Length: 376
Image (cartoon, rainbow, N blue to C red; front, side, top):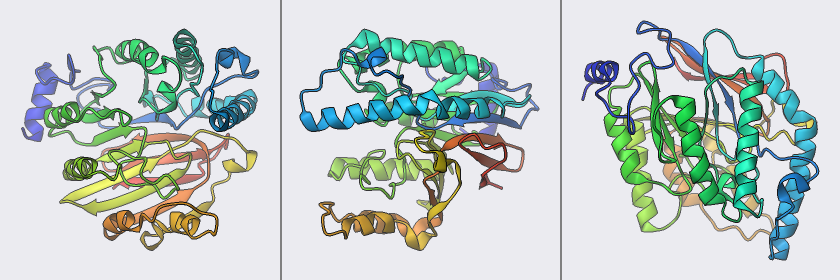
């Protein structure tokens, strides 16, 4: 199917994006509308203080995990008392007449509720709050690992969120891997926790010819330069994962995909060329745990430095990290740009006729902290 076929079928409702499809003008002002913006939040780990609001039934028997997770509850409570409300207010201020929706990159909530019904309440509360504070725009989220973490959390998420995404997008969503379009741009939302490879392949096939292909997934597609570098889409070291990883890397590259993701709690930009095309990846985070994280500072930059952060961690005397240099060596020749920052905030995706960019606003900064040129 060529691009003309995609546009024609999409406009007439013949092409299937899930159970039904949007017309060409979905979330656009008309068929001639080629420019729009979206507000993006990275991981948010929504929670409350005191922890008893959502965690009164939490009962992790593993002492080490219990200590780690209760520290996360305290972190989140402090974050959502002050900094995150300011961040949300800043994000709301980015909405203009061209803004079509809000995207969120997974780990919408902290999870760890100890009860499926409480987990649903956590999901419902955050959706209600974000919709209210972000102008009632359609709100699309991708499942993160925390969104399904805890007793009966997976079942709670699957019973709540696909139905809610159906309401937000105005089409039937039954899975955590799905697609929608904005004008003639395709957005493919992928569950990286439990990849549905057949569905992803189907959605890629059915959206051939899109002007831009955006892949939205919680975990990155390109390996992250962090200690847990294997925690990305099909990042496991098994032969089956390696084959699937390279299959989708090639499929995304041939579409010149723009990957929108989170998970690492960094603001990270990578532009990779290979497999007959290009993958441009923007990793985003709204976990504003310390005031200084609103300042945009670069901790690693340049293709030659990709993988070096983890290498330095591995070389520490007390490190027990496995040598993963071969994984980074596989990708490094194709890296054209690599920028990693600890900064946290909100983001604005700008899609124009000739350029795609993402503006990063650190914390509650009034001015753009950094502009990342994605295309053009």
